[in-house]
Image 1 (cartoon, helix red, strand yellow):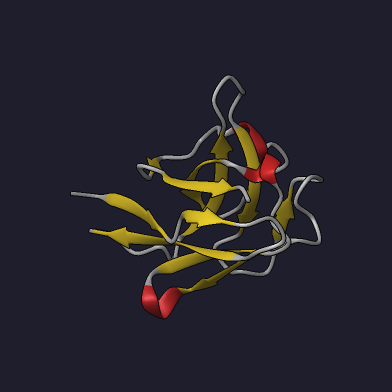
Image 2: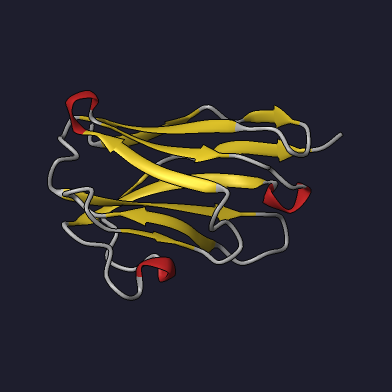
Length: 126
C-alpha cells in the first residue's frame, strides 16, 4: 500500500531532455529525503541525485552534475528529476527511493532507504 511510483521515462535522442517524476502513494513525502538511482545492464546501481526533506540540500553524482536537477513539490507529494543534455550513457532504469529526513554523506550507496519505486526506463539513442 505504501509505494513510490516513477514515471516520465522513455526514448529520447542525445542532447534531449526528460523529466522524471516520483510520486508517493499511501504516505506523505514531507518527512523523507528522496534519492534517484539508476542501473544499466551489467552495471552496478549508482546514485544519481538526492534531495533532503526540506529541499534545502541536494546531491549529484559527478557524471550528471550540471545536467540534471532534482526538485520537490510537497503539495503534490512528488519529487522530480529534470534531465537535460542526455547522453547514451544515461541509459538505465531509474529508481526513486525514500529515507528519513536527510540524504547523508553516503546517500549514493542506497542505504537506509525504506521505500523504493519499481523503476522507469530511460533510453538515450539516436
